[in-house]
Image (cartoon, rainbow, N blue to C red; front, side, top):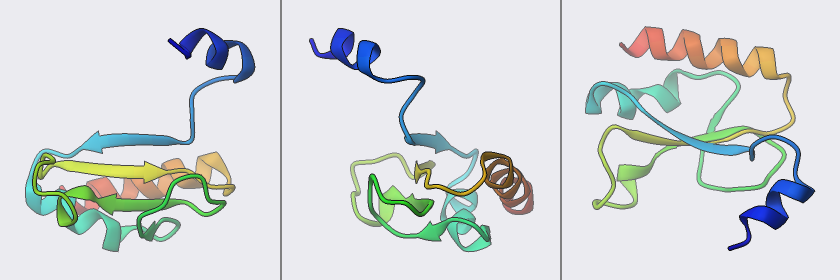
Length: 89
């Protein structure tokens, strides 16, 4: 019900998203592989964070990672994620 208000007030998407990797092993390994993202749980901070959510919630897919984007340069964050994903895949 609040989507219309959010669409009016916000430009673009939010700073949080989830992604799934192809294997549980890759998903568990990714946070340690990244340089610009800290392995931590938080939403809405100024630093970029990533977490393998299954560590805290057994109901969640073991492939899922939750990502919170901070204030770092977008291109640097994209490059870090791409490099990390390729390294664990």
